[in-house]
Image (cartoon, rainbow, N blue to C red):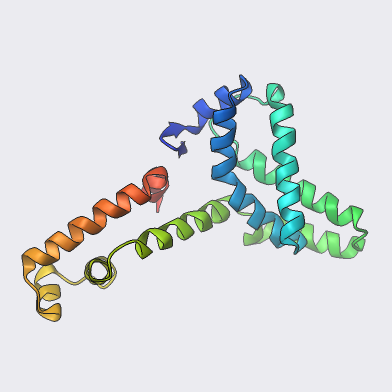
Length: 190
């Protein structure tokens, strides 16, 4: 079950089918970056990839009544964008051999793993969230969470009190929770 902006994706899908523009916008903002990255991997042109994904979302909105209610649309989104990207290559008269090789690579390789592209968006958000931490807080948090040092070890290494280490870690968690609140469900999966 995917949660987007605090709402179950299943609920957003039902609202989309009923014509709710806010639900459409939430789905768009959640999936758009990953879909563009995915399409770019196939056609090797970011601008055209954005066009393909935007066109897909326009068609999604106009055909929303035909959508079958489900828990997630991720597989449908990535399959549709994959097919549109391959059609673009066909239209651009890319040789049949190259298209066949791409199709095989997409089906057998990491290139066609929708989770990978949603994860890449999450990784970008995590990096941005870490950049918002004050330098000392970031340093203490990294030593604690990534290097596995205890609060006592960090205090000794940085020549600060154990209580200061605890405060930095607490502040870091508070900032990261706020910055990543839309992705909390995904973070639990990793």
